[in-house]
Image (cartoon, rainbow, N blue to C red; front, side, top):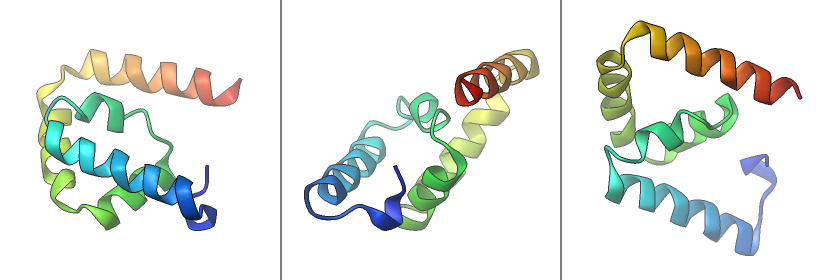
Length: 79
């Protein structure tokens, strides 16, 4: 989904998703990490307050887990 091209109902759903992420942080951080880079960038543009918390969350994860998640993400995105 390209956020720039969504309209109407889909845009409202996306806005609701971002609001849910704000209200449920830090529990939403693992979900945000699964977003493709363009969507994550849009989240940060829409809700910049999520960025600092997500960065802190990343620093709290052991490096082995970060690498494993990145490998899983590359595998999922390439299929």
